[in-house]
Image 1 (cartoon, protein in one colour):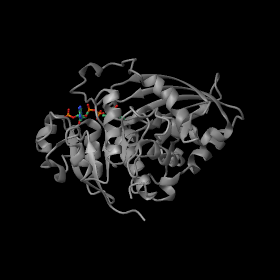
Image 2: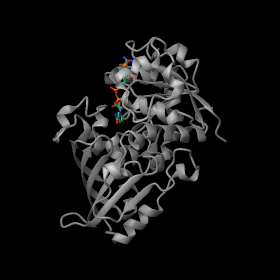
Image 3: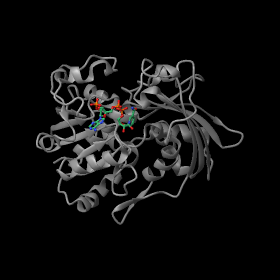
Length: 360
Ligand SMILES: NC(=O)c1ccc[n+]([C@@H]2O[C@H](COP(=O)([O-])OP(=O)(O)OC[C@H]3O[C@@H](n4cnc5c(N)ncnc54)[C@H](OP(=O)(O)O)[C@@H]3O)[C@@H](O)[C@H]2O)c1
């Protein structure tokens, strides 16, 4: 039985933080009671602190407008006494984020994080809820290391992965030998809008710092196994990637090429996608898409603008599955980078943690 939980949003004024605020508006399980950001925003009403940076298509939720923003660092002890867990999405140096998240965990506050700082920490689960919910078991080992009873850190993966890992995952039954992926990533993934990133208009930027390494390595942790208190990375499949920034507001597209040990038919792949579901569907979690993978038959789909909001931006879209001349198959994937790929994925992860009693 899932109860209701009081939640804080650390980084509430940022792009991902704003998404959290909209997703938490009237959420059936989570009640936002703390909004925190840097010392620059602390002490101000939220609407003043976020000001012109508000980038959502809906207005600031009524509950948040007049909440006084707290200082995520200086007020940590006070915040810890007010919440059952926090979401964290901050723009700070990696070592500072690592320290901030551990500080909250040691204050016995579970941290559900969008940041990359702890993704490589072996006893921190990095979870796509439909794919590797079993990794949450490592939290017991992490709590032992941190010396905590309640506090822990759980993270979600990088947003680029969500446009192809969920599509490759059900195909692992056919033995994936290797995959080549090019991602076409939206500007909101850099915390930008067309107003704040005018150089992207009529342009493609062929570099996103650190993204290709994350796109190749993070899937191996997600497909890893729990051994001796840590997640040991899978040895394969080898993934090679190129990541491009494109003039799209929201929605990361992936062009994927893949080869198998036992080459499936096209019908095998379509059926594996159609029939795939995970714990969020079994548990009927509030943010879970009913159908996780949506396949589009039309040659010109999925499109970022038309299809990113499929199932409230929480589904993963696929299309153009066909034989390839060099690899076995190629196809297109799409997912909403700030919903499924960021705040929505973290809210779903928190719902899974709540359902499994990790916030009790
Ligand atoms: N955008 C995406 O699609 C996406 C996807 C996945 C993961 N992420 C990750 O999520 C994190 C946030 O990204 P974003 O795009 O939301 O960044 P952003 O728009 O730049 O927002 C950054 C947030 O961090 C806060 N902050 C900065 N310094 C701080 C400090 N010293 N103490 C406390 N808070 C501080 C800012 O508060 P002030 O307003 O007070 O400065 C703001 O709330 C990053 O780690 C990013 O890699 C982003």
